[in-house]
Image (cartoon, rainbow, N blue to C red; front, top):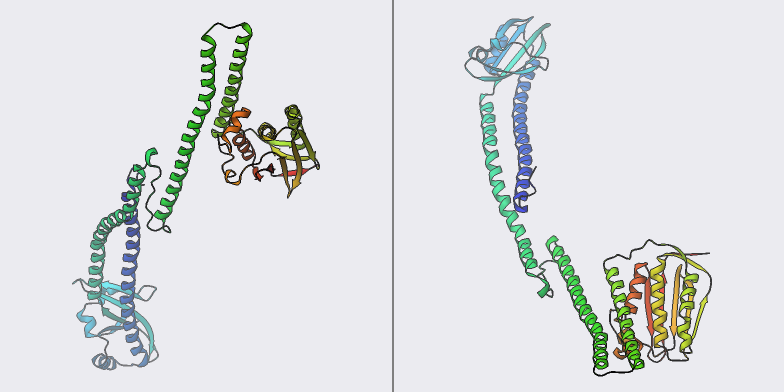
Length: 454
């Protein structure tokens, strides 16, 4: 087994050599067997032709066989009757084939004489002048066997040489094939957090290396976007934290410049507590999003009654709407049940409805509606506030993003409410959509899948 610590180039070369060894072994054995059988088949064909000559002639006397020997192409043959020699040709006697013995069951065999000559022999039984005579013919095959020996030696010697050349060739080809991968590795190693905007060069997007480069470029794009969002998030968080801290510092320094009455100190402390409360909301939002990023809020989902959940949130926030003389209503076509995490969906609804109350002017209306749409639960929050311009729709769910930077300052918002709502809905396999026209209010729609009607 190849060691995993070896380089890919080395492993490819070795695997290539192993496969070549198997292929060459099969080829060499197949070639040798094919040549051998072809040559032996030719010898058998000639011996069969010789035997057919005897089958066409009826011999009764030795003189007839002698005449046949002089005028036929059969060089070496013998005739015997009942195991006793009846006639032997000069070629048979010269080659001293008497010791060749009898044929095995298959009727043909190979015999090597004492002088080292190799003969192929074949025999058959013929009826000559009503007498059963055994005819044996022989073909010298020494040259054929020598040729087979040379072929075998050539294959045996050439086998390791070919494998050695295959190893070097495979190592060279593997290097050529992996050279683009080395360029990709070097280029990817040079890309860091400081230059994530750079990308790998893609020569052929359809081959494996091109697909790898494409995937790496997509990963770099995601990392670049993540770093940018993290950097922007850090800057926004620092900015949001700096404002209340500056207010606290300013209020504290002013209050210490001269002695004040107890009532004045209470006002100062109350103002500082308001800023502390704002800091607390901001920190809570940051912690919520941090847990979301680390997937610490992946609570198990279970069947929940959405009507009861939405009604609870509306009742909880009704007091805020009443303070601004707003009309907050809830309408449900029928009870709907879906598999959700109760707390995260409640958090999304709290942020969306509270956001509608904050940005809807006094005396305005906020309508919350629950209904079934294409086997999904749809929750709509509609207000008649100032609305959101179209250019802000694609960014409205980003952290610390504000369509109007002054609005959150006036309402005490941190710019995280919609980002938290978007995460909470997405965590429950849902979608959140926005429809808004400036001056005509806004509509936020939550869609949660897998709904069962009661």
